[in-house]
Image (cartoon, rainbow, N blue to C red; front, side):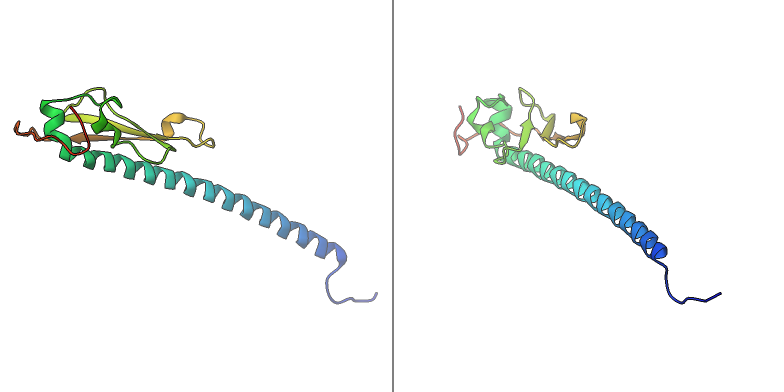
Length: 140
C-alpha cells in the first residue's frame, strides 16, 4: 500500500464548508451588532432631545408658572422645545406642572414593540416668584 502525503480533496472541501459556515455566522452576528448599535444611537439621541427640552424650559419657568401654562403646540414658547429632527417626537403634558414627565419617541421598524422606541424623563422645577418679563421668542 502506498502512503500519500498531504490533504485529500474531501478534506479540503469539508474544511472549506466549515469555514464558509463560520463566516456566515460571523456576518450574521455583525449585522445584529450593527442593528443594536443603531437602536442604541437612536436611544441616545432621544435622551439628548429630552434633556434639551428640559433645559429649554428653565428660562420659561416664570411665564409657564404664572401667565401661560399651556404646553401644547398652540403656545409659541412650546414650539421651540420640540426637536428639529423630524425622526423624534416630543410628548409633553397639556398643561405645565412643576413635576412632569416628558416622552421622546422615535421609529425603528426592526423593533416590534413601540414602547421600546421611547424614553420618558421626569423633571421637577422649583416655584419662582411672579416677576415675569416678556420672554424672548413670543408668548402671551
